[in-house]
Image 1 (tube, rainbow, N blue to C red):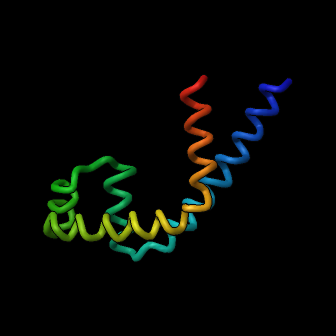
Image 2 (spheres, rainbow, N blue to C red; image 1 turned 45 degrees about the vertical axis):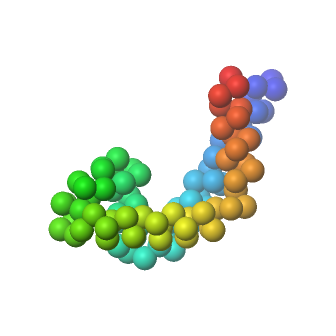
Length: 92
């Protein structure tokens, strides 16, 4: 029974985390969001992103830096939760 309760609590936490991440992503400027998505969700290298969007690699780096700064600020209250979830995931 405890495992079922733990699983439900984890799913609730993960849902809340995902919802907050989506809100944080919505706060990114459009170009930053597009570049972040290509890098983190489509796993493209910076050079591939630059080629695809016809921009310099330096522009990709600048937008990624900005996106990561904004997301770090927006997600800081969730850091303890993320850390705990990762710890539990690797402990299992």
